[in-house]
Image (cartoon, rainbow, N blue to C red; front, side, top):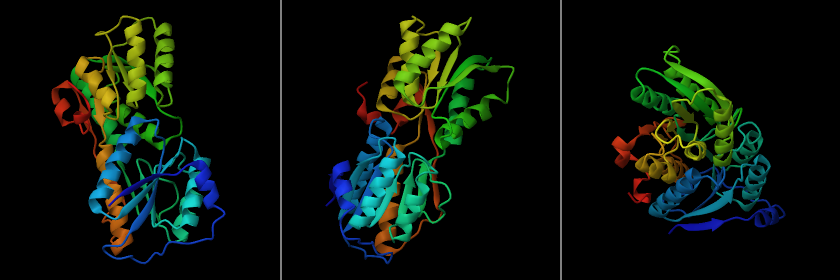
Length: 324
């Protein structure tokens, strides 16, 4: 049986005053009860909600796995506090999507030193090789697929607005690198007329796109975004200017809203990075180690994303969540 628990900030703070109990690094046994903390980057992003749901479904299938939820709220201090409280509580393992790869490193190292194995998901922490595994999408390859989708739709070239993610974030950097790797091979055909951060936010995707379109002399043919929320915000800006059908918009994440937008023509494509698969692999990897001491063959477990257009919409991981 899998039990899902949400840990509030107040409850976690209270745990810090409890007697210290460090989880054992020794295998607990094949059928042992297991308790893990899952610290999501934020539940305000549909990507992480779906990832969590699939992770918990896998935990239920495995059996005897109790999942403690903690919303990271895009805050490194919040996640650090959650990890510290989980160590005190005596969890058997931690899965975390870190808000800051550098700031979370000491807390992750402290957990491992206390005998609590850690799996990072969606993105790694820096400088902690003792992490059991990092389970993530290969964001460079995913963005290369995004670039290839653009090239396939515009073989004679295109002018492009590039909406980038949070500055300094590895995911944002990798996705920016991937799309440039593909399109910069033909710089005479594919011209980036504006590149600005919209911080993975739909509201900022809307506002930044509006500002860019106001400043451009000509309407661009393409808007490429490092996540679906920014792409959907850009779609709002395009619709407000009655430019539907004149600007092709490409997202990244394979979210339900993006799949709906592809179906109705608001978006040209998204990149499915299979967050559900990431969640399932992460929890199985962690539980296998806790129970039987089994380590993954490769500590860097990468899922290769796929570009989703209207032509292959049925291949999307979350296709069952939309109504055609």
